[in-house]
Length: 118
Length: 109
Image (cartoon, rainbow over all chains, first blue to last red; front, side, top):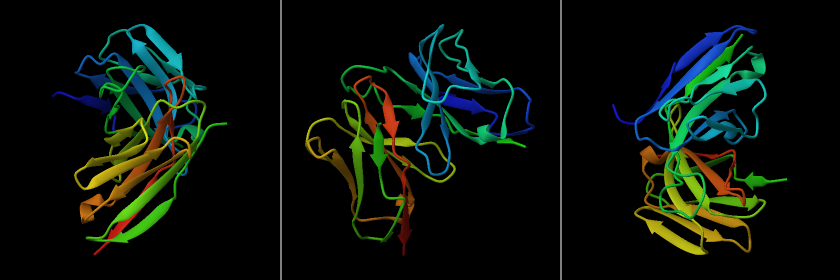
């Protein structure tokens, strides 16, 4: 199916465990993003990627690792989960991260992954 | 620091008009976005403003005043399906999106 898919949609884990959230997009968008969404906060950028093998930190990168070996995949790993990482995680993609608006800067989001760390 | 302010929650009646305000203080400005997010779902794009003025798109309109650091989203002829959170986001000088916490809009029959 075309679009951007995240898995798993729901995950419960324990403190200290490693967790990987998957994100796959079928549009060949160059940019991909990981956000977390918590009550009372705006979406906060964790990491983003401008292309395969190019990643950069966002606002809240600590405790997270990303990779992008292929354009279509952008997994997010929590190496040792903590309770403060309980959140809803959204992956998004876009044709461009910079430049004038041509519709290319619009983010398309996945359905989200709800992570609970006990 | 960079800041986006929106009301936390608003209530309106089906068929009426509602205006959701957004004020911002950011390092530079490269446009303002509005997204809609239904409960438990992903945000979806509604509108983009980079020049001052009103952009109309069906029942939804978005206004921008760059000198005042202010935008609003106007929803007309409200329908129950408009019950959602509305997220304001500003693209700063580094082309990073700064997000507000969102306004939860409750529509009553």
